[in-house]
Image 1: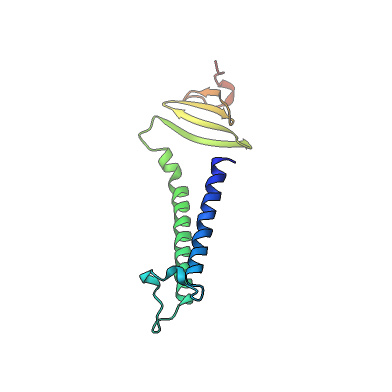
Image 2: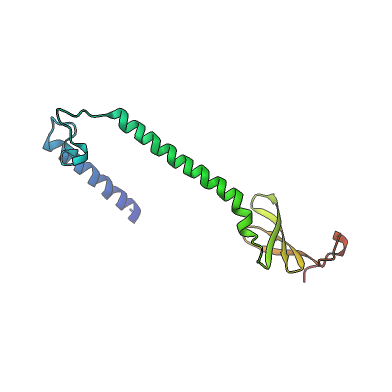
Length: 143
């Protein structure tokens, strides 16, 4: 057995033993495990409110979902602006995805533009363009 499997088995046994011990201590009380919790005190004047807990849980789930959507929206809106800050010398101008994890990137370094190709294992310079280059027939070949 691996260390991860042993940890899972030990945790499961701990949970099962603690549940069994709390059930054996007070078999007639359904909430015996929570008897010492001051936030869960059930008395004659207070009834268990499952509806209130349900709505608080749903509100928490909706809040987490709204925060996730807001984080996604902000990352999409500001992602390009953070990458291409105005004072940077190297700027990513454009990316063209060619397939699964393969892309061409147009990068501007100073007054030169460089086209590179990327795969999961390599980065290759395809061409180098000067600022006065207007068509693809005058591209510099990589050395």
